[in-house]
Image 1 (cartoon, rainbow, N blue to C red):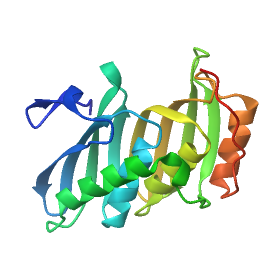
Image 2 (image 1 turned 90 degrees about the horizontal axis):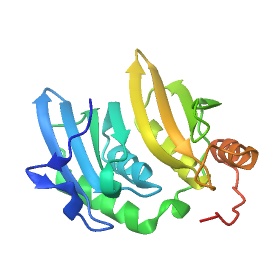
Image 3 (image 1 turned 45 degrees about the vertical axis):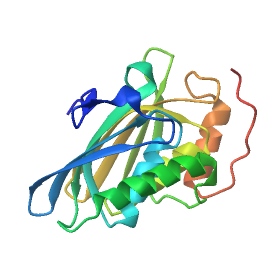
Image 4 (image 1 turned 90 degrees about the vertical axis):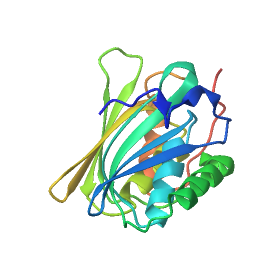
Length: 201
């Protein structure tokens, strides 16, 4: 489920910093394929997932990856009503991007969290397992953003009633997660306040 580099016949490179393009294809019943194009930024997935949750949209699977030029087109398989107002969903995503990751609510995530190196030393892998439910991805993505961790790739899957979300990430230094990053991540998942430090450029 690799994302394309164009959406609705237009290049995603033309998007503004807080602008989103969304195309929803109805696959039948309540099943949809949704492509969301935007400039990559920390908290982007949280903004998308929060908008979906607010509209009662359940994410069944997804592929998220940063593309060339800092543009990404995320592809989601979702369950949503045939009456879903996708323009309103897109507007809520834009509003979430403007608000920024720092304003996401501090809410505990009932999930099992595992953190491991990616094998190269440049990035880390986060695996989150939890009972699948509407809004889970929004909570997970918001917690990752609050911790100051940046998502580069993600694979979202649902097996039976279990959601298994795997993220390839970097920490505040732009490299694999440090001990401080891991503490911040676990604090965010526990719903605790995350102490912020200045990130080196």
